Length: 111
Image (cartoon, rainbow, N blue to C red; front, top):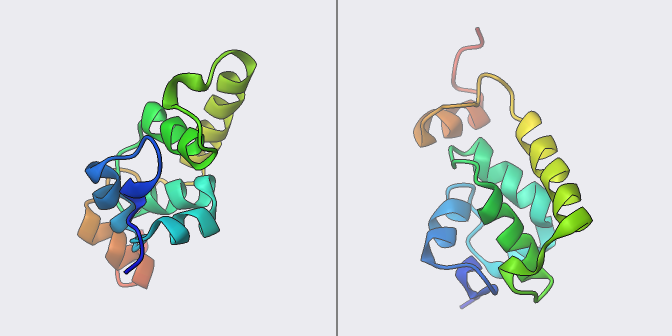
């Protein structure tokens, strides 16, 4: 059986739920998608955006402690985080998990 996302440094059991909403159930899948795409898909599936959670995951994928991100690197990370959130359509923001899934399938009526 493949390792869960929580097997990545800095991530705990809540990461399994957060990424699992977007059907990212393994650490390998998360790594293959890359941090930005994995985080985006999880937000699109109804996850709540948290900057610390995002950069802790990015640092973990690099094998670094979560609090190792500082200065210019942290400012750049904040720009990436904002860009990920900006990719969400207004219709996806604030949707429940089931609504986000139905939207992904094209079931929800367009406004």
